[in-house]
Image 1 (cartoon, rainbow, N blue to C red):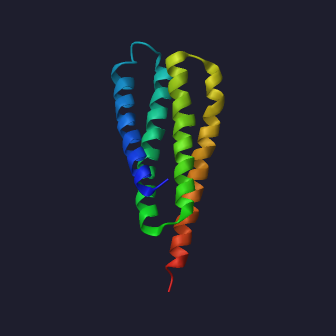
Image 2: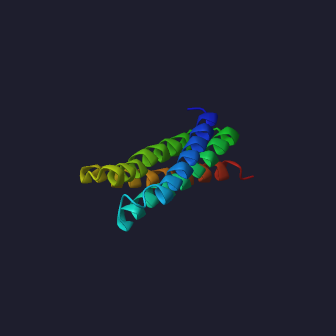
Length: 129
């Protein structure tokens, strides 16, 4: 995946997070209880954070061309789909079985941040004089 794809995916995901956040704040409040609404908000929050991370990865990969950045971006995309997506699906359908994949999405986020750290460290080490 090229750097501009991460920029595009991050931008679209950020836009979707805003739309879903507005939907959660104004459309779901009469449909679900406060606990379910909080779960939906958690999905939006994590999607938004990781959308911004995808933008950073797109720019960093463009500048440093380090493949570890790509793997970090893939992990964040997977995390958004599994973590946030499963929370959205659970709140909207009430199907509890879907939350079994939520922790896998969380682990994917952790792996993404770990890979981002290692890629930044590798770039820092290579720039030492």
